[in-house]
Amino acid sequence: MIRAGIITIAAALIAPNVAQSDTLVATRTIRAQSILMAEDLKVVEGDVAGTLISVDEAVGLEARGMLYAGRPIRMSDVGPPALVERNSIVPLYFTQGSLTISADARSLSRAGVGDTVRVMNLSSKTIVTGIVGPNGGVHVGRLTSQ
Picture (cartoon, rainbow, N blue to C red):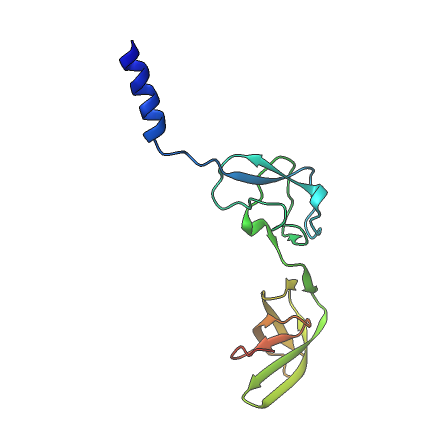
């Protein structure tokens, strides 16, 4: 009897602690394109792969699709807020060395900073793919530190 108790205590001390992870969920249904605020989110116990785990990392991001109350929020469910709206006119930049060429383009989708977006050059009607910069301009070609 005493031996069994000692074995149980020893097993509890030797066994690795199973880490409990937290998962971020929505407190209410959140529509696509809404900016997340702290009151929209809460942390619950659970370990769901690929989900956000803290309120701080999600506040200020934009919902990419509907987020339902109580369901875990995956990293792909949110992203930076869109700076470029579909069909908006945006500056298009190509930079190589000290040469910068700019033109106006029409955005073919919504996108945030760092997102890839397809745009149509209004002068040539050519469709190109670029990356949205912090000023809302679309950069094509080799990326520079602008």
